[in-house]
Length: 399
Image 1 (tube, rainbow, N blue to C red):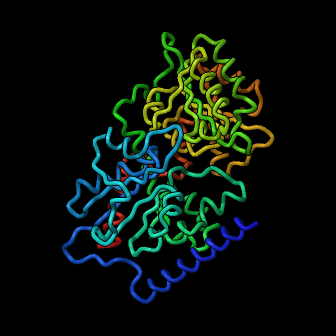
Image 2 (spheres, helix red, strand yellow; image 1 turned 30 degrees about the vertical axis):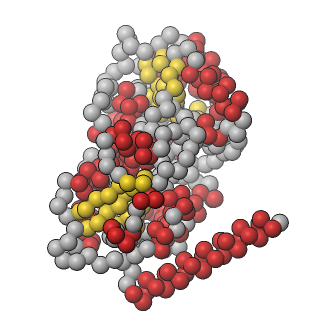
Image 3 (cartoon, rainbow, N blue to C red; image 1 turned 60 degrees about the vertical axis):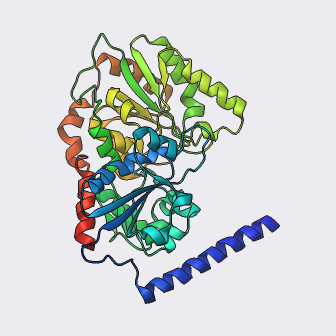
């Protein structure tokens, strides 16, 4: 009871402080001024290692431009089963400072890039600052669940961001419908993460390449972390899929769970059992790399729960099996129509078995439709050049 009162009081005080800063911006200027001839000071705040693909192409464009002064800041939010952003960027050879070392007054950022709501919850000064907040959501939401509308489109970050860069016009429409501010600040440039995937220099299987008989068909399997909710089908189909793959000789299953999947097990013993079950399964490889680029470059097909990975994958034109059950949350119409018209729905075990049996043999009835019409009806810009588009937009808006 007391904890609940304290929690509500803390929320109220935070809202009061936020309101004070909003009034201050009205009277003293909303955004930090950029002096003529000076560089645009830009900060990329990385909270999770897997979010770097959202920033990388924009960061590279900024670094190669004389118009920007760029700083990467790591916010090392601890997770049980991943590397910290600091360790991740060190391996990539990218310079950064930790957020505890960052001084707003010394650097004076004009732009702050974030990819996660957690970043602004942990550091409320970001939205209270007079910097222009650029939000690149980690994933493109597929959800039509009512609770998703607030969390995906109408939190304080969505309302206060200077710009939100999204996958396409269908996302702009969702902001227009569900965000109190509307959608005038939402820009359909395409998603930089998709550009990072298709720029990856280790692409091994092209869009049109046939599955080779002398190589196992590589199928990527994405498992959502919400095991006891409406998104993950692990409890219903997990062991079944592993047993099926064990029985086939022509499949390599690359299991790449949602980054929070193993974190979702509160019992360490259960987590170890599931981890071992997947990693030791015949014909199965467990991929826990921060970036999805490597897995996307080599796979021939995708099996997935409802997830933003669908939008990351569709430009490959490779087949997708969307897993669902009677209790699954609904996909919004744009995503569902892509799956229904051009891919496959696995809402029962027999359909999963058919997909795993037929795709490795080259039997893909929806392939011709995907190649002839899917990209024309997506309403999503082609993935290459997204970082450059974002850079140009920013320069035209604040110079």
